[in-house]
Length: 317
Image (cartoon, rainbow, N blue to C red; front, side, top):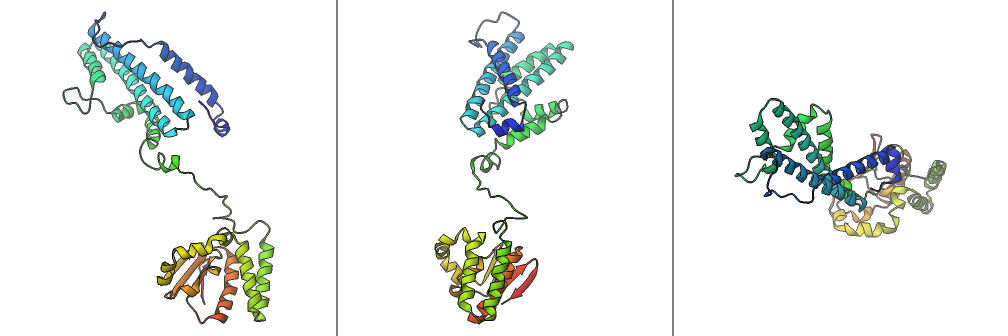
């Protein structure tokens, strides 16, 4: 089986474990017979013949499953590998439980129970009423868990990858677009740019004090280009807004959680029915820039329906 270097580092003994597993599989292969003929003429007592037949069936199944576990894993079919490993798990628990019961019945001279047990394991079924009712796999696993603590937990972990839930569906097949996480959520600016942002805020104050609206607008545009929350979508922002233009026009309340500097790009002039735009973010620098945006907006519009919240502080403009 092929494994990534990261997996080998995480499990230093992985190679040795795989070598042991391969030796066991080869040992199982050497014990197989070529033909299992239920109609053959038994050369031993019937119960022993049935047991030998059952053991051979189990060996054939175990070898087939083991081989396909490796093939599926090497092909990148992880879900198939987990399904097959779980089937092997069930195989092993049933055989171990069988050996325990056989040993006990033979010691107690309960040979009818020996015969019935072997027949049940050979022909047990949950669907054919004419056949003996098979033992539930969880019953066997829960019984053996008392002897091997953690057995049931291991089986349930395998089952997580065999049912249509997160582990076997989204967890295996979806490729997540991962970003590095800085602080609580993300880093909005490049490292070391805090001083530049503070300088921008200072220049905004100067422009607004002088009523230089053109310069202030240019500084807001500069902030939009530098901030992650807006820069990463700046190229597509107009197309982005056009896709929900009707929604913008008809909305009375918009809540922008973790909005960064997005309000600087929002088309407020098209939001004819908007009563409240609520912005919430923990980024203090964004909050300070938007405070200056408030002043500019008030100079251009008679509008007082935007709420900015930063660390539970709220103000209107």
